[in-house]
Amino acid sequence: MSILPDPIIKAIESLSDLPGIGSRSAERLVFSLLKNNSGLDQKISNNLKNLRRDIKECQTCFHFCEGEQCLICSDSKRDEKVLCVVESPLDLVALEKTSEFRGRYHVLHGVISPLNKVMPGDLRIIQLLERVKKDDKLEEIILATSGSTESDATAMFIAQSLEEFFKGKISRLSRGIPSGGDLDYLDIGTLSRAISERRDF
Ligand SMILES: [Zn+2]
Image (cartoon, rainbow, N blue to C red; front, side):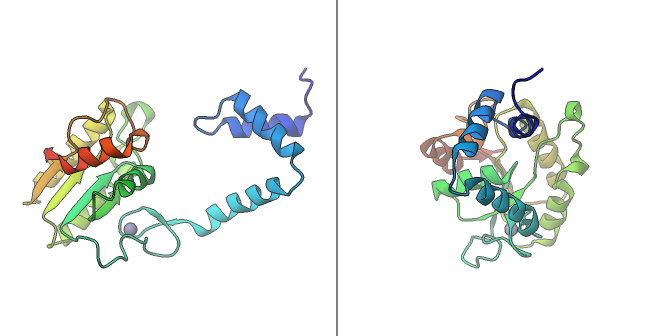
């Protein structure tokens, strides 16, 4: 039997379900919240509730946003000729930090992974193909997937689907993305080079 009361155990268990938080870190967070008397637990709880209520996916690129369109899609100064396909909003944020890319994005929300039962229909791939078909200004599509085998396979699948009708250039990030490495873990310099020295797919 645990020496901790049930609400504490439940809080620890739910926090440890988050990526990157082990049970030891979850324990520390819960005890720190119990000790804190400034209303931090309430603030966190309210902010998390608002996330579900207020955040949607952009109707065009599927990045997270408030309302119908994200800040990037509604920015008329962005280059309409280049589209960068990323796996997650986190990768988009990482690329934005480099200030190297001024085009638009398309967020897949994952990679094809038959082992984890993630098939092309579970991602925003069909929406990407439809979007490209309708867009006559587009000249280049960058497949900015990360370095894992599943990411490579996803990029390959998308490139083959695009080649059936897209006449522009299809490119990918330069070598230098460590294999298996997520884009948002890379330092800004490496990621800047990877996008500015991108190569043909
Ligand atoms: Zn958008």
